[in-house]
Image (cartoon, rainbow, N blue to C red; front, side):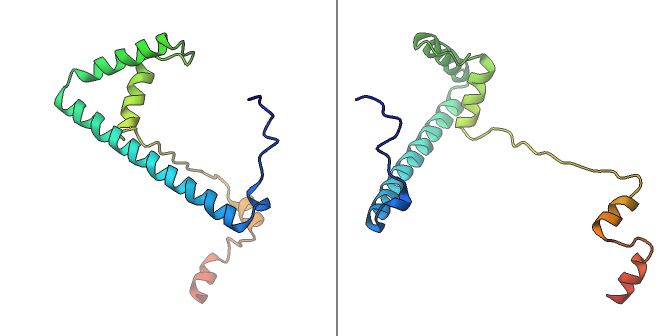
Length: 127
């Protein structure tokens, strides 16, 4: 079948309510199946890694071989293979970014926000 650039796709808002419900139902079923497969794969991976400490190196080597065999151009490296395994078992590190802003002279900012710094104590006593 030739690719037609999505010309046969119909947007959800152009479909009938019953078609929308059917598509959403099928999507929910497929999503549940995918979640169950990922969960099962994760559990199996954890079980194997816990019971065979040398398995991690074997998995990394298998990923290399598969990438080479299939001609994968993603540039699979030892780090990427390890990250893939770590993400699969749910132990990827959580990235947190904290931002602090130090303002030497807050007068221009206070004016911009409409805050009167001189009467700040008066405002507290009124509340």
